[in-house]
Image (cartoon, rainbow, N blue to C red; front, top):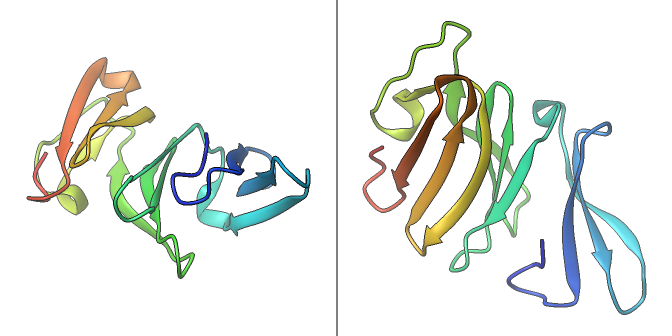
Amino acid sequence: MIDQRYNNLLLITDYSNKAVRTVDVMSQFVGTFVKSDSLQYIRSITQDQKSGDVYVTVPQAVYRVAYIQRIVSMISRSTDSFSYKDSTLLDSLFDWPYELIFITPHTLLVADKDNKKLRLVDMNSDIK
């Protein structure tokens, strides 16, 4: 994915190293955007165009990485019971959030793989 703040950077998930990596397309330098044990088995990545914050899915949760501070925080969790719950981000439930993308500046679309549902997240109201 092309970084929305710096067009010469690519943001790439590094599945095995629990990291999001950067690739400078001009210098071809590879760096690390963030590395965290929370990011085990990263599946998908997207970026908020306004804040630059990066969102990733792992089998257990959806995480936000604050762009400037590089702080990783869980915004929604997963269950192992094939159940789902619509609620605020931190209180909602997924069963393997798989892919995600911003479809408007304030709306995140998340594929809830094992529930076979597409979930819309209104980032302004913090309601799913």
